[in-house]
Image (cartoon, rainbow, N blue to C red; front, top):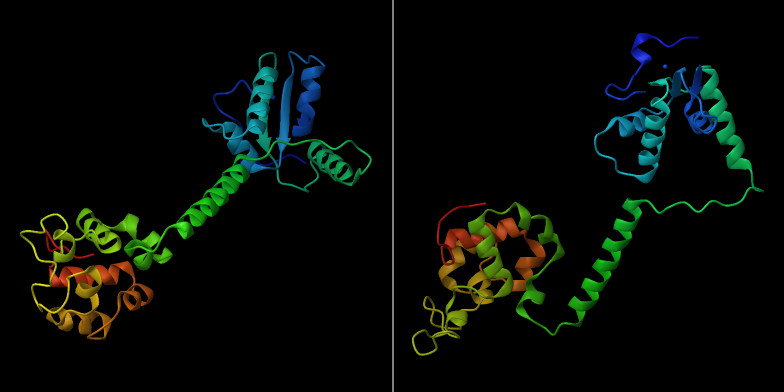
Length: 256
């Protein structure tokens, strides 16, 4: 049975045309095969694409590419795709040997290299655990009270102005009287300039000052909320809508 034209995938640009399967080309190298037209059948399109790629991502692909190029130095070699389990002799032989090898419990164990993706995943998990441990050991702070993990996906999507206001909201280092008083205690009172009832903290501005009750009602469906109520029940985008509507922290009036 011969493959149709659509089933042939030569590799242009490589000196890669006897007929064999992928498992046989190391033997061809060891035998010193030269001056032959060699066709190598492979039923894995992903393997062929990896070998044909200009970017090598694994040692296995690198070794296969180097072996094929070495074989191609003294031979005409064609690496082609064939459908699996369709009676191609070399391919069927490779499948048979693979099944036999998987059942051979008496063979010596082979130590395979750890894939890079597994190493990266383990590193991310370890880094996350260490970060969470360090975070949990920190003393109580405004940022710890305000931060929620759900904000993580929203922050990279913010424009510069909203990112600046989100940072003020989350850190407490905001252009509100309570924070500004720390830098200019003789010129700026920490008291809220709108209601004159409490210090103008982020919590007061977000959920308690009567000056912004209409905005809170429209966006949070409540006239009075605690900071915890807001960060627990609303997205960062919704919180920024409120901040932008008040224009209290805005150096521009852009919305998310």
